[in-house]
Image 1 (cartoon, rainbow, N blue to C red):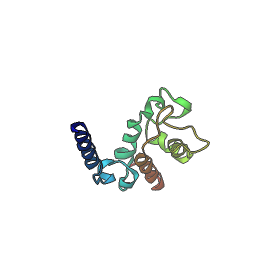
Image 2: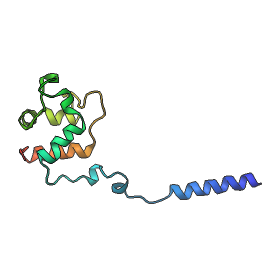
Image 3: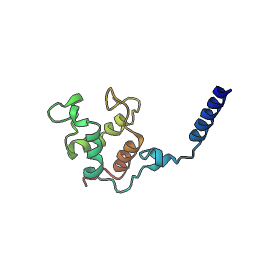
Length: 124
């Protein structure tokens, strides 16, 4: 009888803990729903995203994987203008999925790149 009581108490505790109300934006602060795409700049937003995913490891002026450089604004802008940057990071059909051999960038980072591109990809 004691065993059953302890099992029921344990189950009750699990149910109480598991039934809490959590806001998605508090649990996952970088979700697309909580992604600030205003005031996006190359130097403060886009370049750090490219560094975060180690893009320059394969796409620097030294390694130049796929004959693509992402070493500076001019090189990145070239990939924006030919459509390859967004197609690759968004895993669109017909593009090499980047980062290659790794998970897709999180949606918030993709949204920030898209917002920057839609703003004309300024050098700011």
